[in-house]
Length: 104
Image (cartoon, rainbow, N blue to C red; front, top):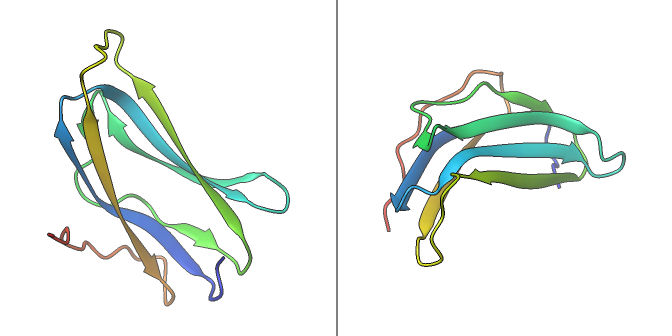
């Protein structure tokens, strides 16, 4: 639920383990209409993005956040990959602010 209008963006993406995700996209949808508001592709060619994504304006109200992962073509049942996403939210402007990953 968004209580204050602003702009959301992905500031960092980290991966660990065996790279098994070819592409990973985050889709934000309006919860009332189901219509996509924006999307962020954060892994391409099994590599995470460097830097921040473009920002996406969100009005007040509820949203769904979906994660769509496309695996690489050859997977083993014992391979795992952990993806950590860091989001930023700016209530002043659509400017993205790079933030360091939080350890721990």
